[in-house]
Length: 142
Image (cartoon, rainbow, N blue to C red):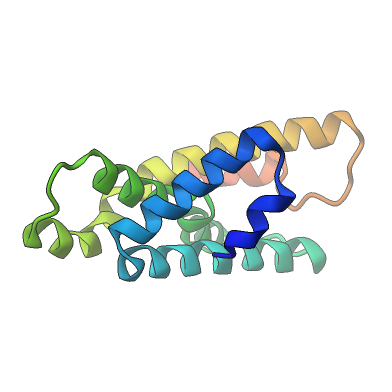
């Protein structure tokens, strides 16, 4: 992360940014890096879908939505921040977190998309790939 970027933030956000930066550095680059990469890649996939006006299949949506909802990243942050001591066993469990957070992440993604879809509909946006018909199909397939 760019420490100098803090200067571009409003005063009330500087403390939050620095706290998050320090926490990430203290907990360990090797644990957070892969999750941040997955999150950024998921955002890029959604941006590509949006730009190409592509409606993903239900499986594409679910596979990407787990990461774009940032569930695994948030869980790892919370897990290590709430733990007094980080054990070898805890470190070895990181690989299991993705499967354990799958359904909660999908629930967060759906809730977010439903709210965004409603807002975009209210302002007359025609460019959203998320729509009510897609969500109906998705919910039937879950």
